[in-house]
Length: 303
Image 1: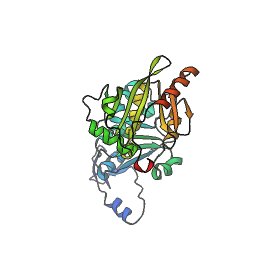
Image 2: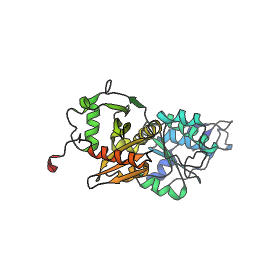
Image 3: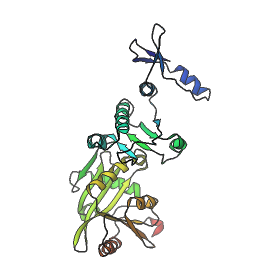
Image 4: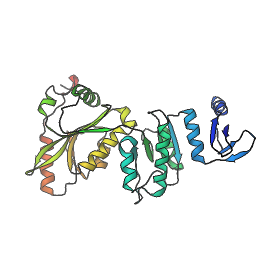
């Protein structure tokens, strides 16, 4: 199935046997061996075989099994997602990945370069393979080619109609007509495809201006591609101290709670904060968040 030259380099992949197995309902297991034109059998590196098969088959996802369960930094912490367009150069240059993860990420970047933009690779443990294959959340580290995140300090230069459409799609409500004219942003993180954004303002809290996450919106498609996670991670790196609120029925409140240092619940809203430790400051932030006027209109059935 794998034809190699005398040096052992793969020069051709015959996927007919794989297709026949799939049609028969069987799962093919490929051994890392190749055959030369003269009939000599060559032992191949498993990664080389994976790359060659992936280029031929162009899969939606390539899953790598590792006893480590994913890519990890030098402290042993798991990286949940890597957006290559946004994160690769920084992550590789920081030198915080352990040597094995550093090599693996470099190999995955080369693999995804030759696959469709929608393809992804994941590194997980054998014990979590079923979760990776059959659940939306997956397990381990998800690596995608991703897309660049733009950072703006005003709405100038932004297609506000596309941004409005994104916000209304994600929240299922109409944005107030004067939102972009009235809102004074501190920072706007925006995926180049306009499928994810984080909009922050500066709000007075206890006599000082503190970043407030006014909107965080990610389309379901971008969630699956890790774009929203990339925006969130960059925002948190650059804006460590922040607070925000979400409606009590928001389906991602559980995820917000995992990201936050603390939260306060009312009947209508949950208020979250990061890097706040003084009680008076937290109380002032909660009061400010709860007092923020609504910028999304209620659906007709709620009015």
